[in-house]
Length: 364
Image (cartoon, rainbow, N blue to C red; front, side, top):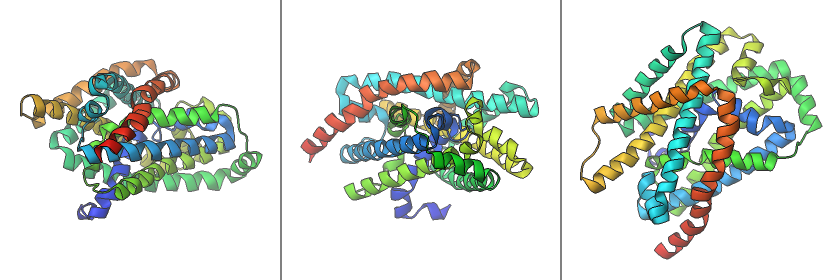
């Protein structure tokens, strides 16, 4: 993994790769989020909404990572203590809720595919995912970071191959939808919501930004991260236009699209990639929680979590999310994500763009 060691990779690629790795499991891995927040607004509405998302990501990532760099706060507890003072606990509450919700979406999707495609009991897949996530967190931050980076390269290859296959078989329908350029009302708010609730990931992955040393590096890294994360969403949105509006009713749109293409080899690769993204998302979120607990122990007791304690936290988080997953993937995304997004606007996005910028100015 030496190609991940050069300074420019750690500065400009790793933060975005980790952001994308955690984001991809609940959203791009299943495609349900893309349909819910972009495709249902039509070809033009989806693309315009994604533009809103990218702008929001660049702005908030830049200020957040610059705040972390200046004040040297690389876990979300320390970050929000510096930003909000005693109000930091408000983010803690929302983070725990979103943490469980995202892992529940991941678990629900895994169970759905295992049962419908292979007839495997739901909890078998959850148990397997639990073991791998616990193993990754057991070995610590460096192994996890490199594992997520390598898996992202594999995912991008799969995304591009899927898009080309979908384009080759549905180019006429996609062309018709793009030419019509439907823009349904609500695309701007939806793109804003999508940006908001995914931004909860950012304070949890501050551990990936430790290599950033200057403001220019922070800005460059933020732009790269936003593009890395938005590109697969754009590919999926365009591909879904080949079955629009029928795709809106699919629980796992990517799975439905690949099945309709009739490519057995692509379906096999997708299933491997999908379960890998579930593991990525779980491991990335849990690592953020571990960094938070480690920060508390370091301040209060001058101690740190042991590898076995890290693995125990992973098991507990996935276990709770597996219970929540029984609600089903569509209600979880449609109701849970959209509602909690406004909470992150109040306790994270607005404070970091106002109070955060003010404190950065004072700090300098």
